[in-house]
Length: 200
Image (cartoon, rainbow, N blue to C red; front, side, top):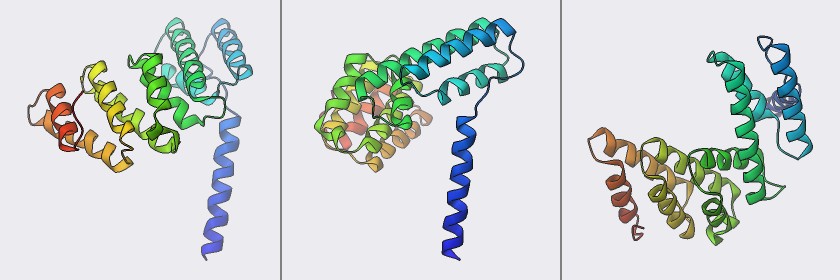
């Protein structure tokens, strides 16, 4: 039974992968917009940038009713952010890390700050934990924690080789504090101190 389940899971993964490789642009786009996006995505793919997030961005824009010009701008911006993230993490970086890096850049994190986080000895050994760290960083900024404070706080945790669980605790703790009426920046500072790290 276990063998059959593993085989089924493998087939499912293969189907998902095949589906990801067969992405197409939505039908609702104007012909000129479609041509522009196809050129943009082809250029990104040639440069080694994964195309799946770009197709997803187009679909998201269409689903939200965005006009064609806005969709093109959004895809162009994402392609640039993915390219910058790839420069930071290297050509061998996998999609989850690239996407997390691109999201951090989009949230306002500077390329040099992203590079410092990525080059930390605490980040070098585990790309998965680095991805979690960046997802936490983006989440903090979304909760209106100032970018500089969020960035330096995540940097301090990465430097200390923080675990996925510690990043999750920070994210959940800040959310609880905000719901209780505490200021986002005060919450982050206090939560970092609770983890035994001097606040930045």
